Image (cartoon, helix red, strand yellow):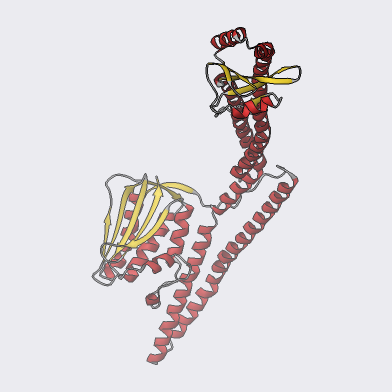
Amino acid sequence: MRRRLVVTYLLLLCMVLLALAIPLAVTVASRETDRAVADRLADATRFASLAAPAVRSGELDAVTDELRRYQELYGIGTMLVDQDQRVLSVFGRRPADPAGAIRGALAGHQVGSPETLWPWTTEPLVVAVPVSDGGAVLGVVLTVSPTDRNRRAVLVVWLVLAMVGAIAVAACLTTAHRLAGWVLRPVTRLDAAAHEIAAGDSAARVQPGLGPPELRRLSASFNEMADAVAEAMERQRSFVAHASHQLRNPLTVLRLRIEDLGGGLDDEDLRADHEIALEETDRLADVLDGLLALARAERGQQRVEVVDAVSLTRNRVQAWRPLTERREIELVAVLPDERLPARMVATALDQALDALIDNALKFTPAGGKVEVEVAARDGGAEVTVRDTGPGMTEEQRRRATERFWRAPDAQNVDGAGLGLSIVAVLVEASGGRFTLAPAATGGLAATIWFTS
């Protein structure tokens, strides 16, 4: 937008400068031509007055001496022609085609050619004056003047005009850039606030009362819209958190009742149904826990802290080791010897590791391996969880962080489809990166990165 305004201002200025400079440049060239022609006409007229009695009497020595001295002194060629166009004397440079000028002078006119001395022309200035006596034209005096000095004078003035125009354009460019910045300052602030909100800062607003009335109304409308969106999102998160929390009590009571009912069941089919009902209540509890964790992670008000990624990862691996031993899965931690600080929201790495390790164990068969590696990379701490499971396709990796999404071949695997979504939200809130890629072992490599 600023570029367009600056280009518009410059275009208008250039049009004004051209409208003024071109006529002025033509006027300068015409004025220099008129001055040179007038000077040559005055000289040629004087020679014509001297030549009239000499041509009538035939005694040309005095006139030719004047013409020769004039050519030697000023370097201007001269030519004297009678009424029959016979050359009586010539000194210095002759014009390439004097016939036209001579015919015009014999007709009683004073002739000057070319009409305008442009800097790019090289032809000399030819002036022809009739030699008259008593109204009769007896001949023509013709001068041929070099125009280098005149053309140079015109060119110097043109260069001065060009320099003035360039200075004006440079001054306009600076002024237009500042003026465009002043005009667009409210729009720039509005754009910055929109980017801050898109980046997760729901409290970003535009300072009201700045700029023209139209932009003031736009800023006020933007702030109202941002308030409405932030309020709606907060209500949604509060509802999810409250609903998840409030549903846990009746769900706990329901599970206890179902457990109590199982004690009086003797039929094997009923016991199987009873076990399925208990599993479904556990599944529903997992969904509620996931929704509650996701709502807390999306609130954007978490406390940021710096933790030792190595120590925290070692503790989470130790916590998951009993389960991996029961499932006959090897859990390996590859950790550096020194501390590795990582900046994140509170409990982000704990929850992310729990979700990633849990996800890896679900898809790794017995006898497989899950590896957790911590390394310093790109000025931060990188934690990678690799497994030897079936892995994911590119499309599945792209959709894996969507809420409640599950791969078609994983519908029978325990889970609510929220684990990777929670990881993505926590890592994003911490200013880190979360990527899924194929592992060298054939499974999936889930990598999270936090700044140090």
